[in-house]
Image (cartoon, rainbow, N blue to C red; front, side, top):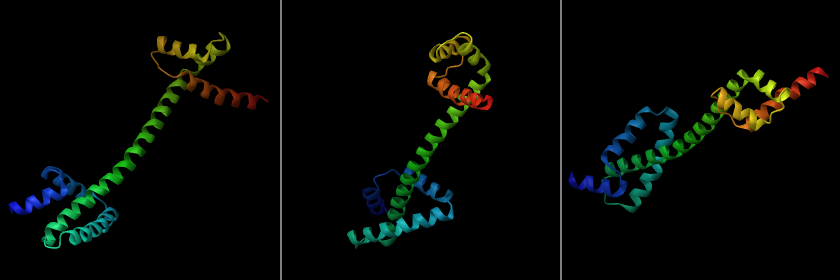
Length: 154
């Protein structure tokens, strides 16, 4: 038993808790993900068996499964984290845009009647309304909304 654990530790180089965590992730996977993991498992087990012909196949299978799970986590984690970053960026942008639309009458008044720049409007909103927004966001929304209004009037 001690020898088996040593073989596993030498190959995986991760703690027993991390191994359990990978198995818990495997339990939560969908059928499609299981099949992909088992495909990777097969590839890893062939490599392990060729490089370790005298080892017990059950130990090699366990090691291969952990390798496959690690690869699956690495691949899906990268994709999910990128998607989450993009999603968070769009959500923040949409929240900021909606909040800016609430102050649009003030923005329009400051721009048209008082002739303030977009930077000055952003500073005003930050100081008086406690709403921090970049001047370029105001400019983009201004061009979008005010050009639409001009096109409608013509």
